[in-house]
Image (cartoon, rainbow, N blue to C red):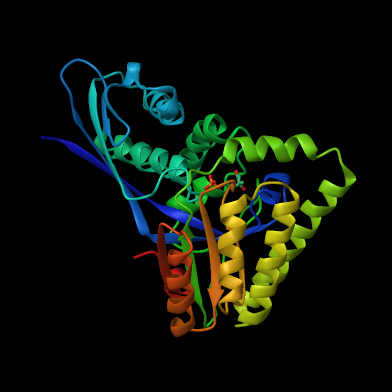
Length: 311
Ligand code: PMV
């Protein structure tokens, strides 16, 4: 039986979330531990979906998956196809945790449908469709999630510009910790937008962009102490933008109290995940243990150099 396959993975924003929506740079890495596979095959009468959140007809899919629905509709429209399909999606990306799960599910599904029809998919076509589907998930997406969930390398990303892949030259360990709470990206992005008339908010966005510029230099020149500082300062500004929450702040404090070089929330915020930077694996294991003892549901540890190339 003919089958189409598509893949995507999670992403971690090292710095620049929210300010990236306003044209400031952000740095993100593909997150190898979390993956999505979509499989497309022939169906009898209608398009069906089988994923963790829903099993049934596409036309009856719940509102929660509206962005995926949009991605499928736009893909079939572009391909000019109306045939019934069975779409099966398997994901290890925790949903709504700041890892780009909504973009990743669209990326994997679009790739699988194109593969099923044996039609080449350009990168521009992929990013354009995900940009539309992400408007439903995020309101005003920067495009960072679409790029990072489909890319194999870290990026210095600026909205609507040709972006630069970067190589992390850093001896340090990244800890990712999940608060276990769902993030509220769409709400947080909308709330920042509603504050944008304030000169103070504009200043915060400006400075967050400057931190991303500095972070690029530190990442490329093995300066983990300085990167750590700038991460923690970015967290303070994200708190001021009101996109953090108690759990994220708590895990950031626990990391810093246990020897992290820096720590911050990652992604949309108000739940989801945080990241911390440790000097070495011994420190990272200690911090990770403390984070779990203080409420983190799950942690992942990575040597920074491991994040340069998605396997
Ligand atoms: O919460 P996530 O993984 O979807 O990341 C959102 C990142 C933001 O900068 C807050 C929004 C965006 O579109 O870039």
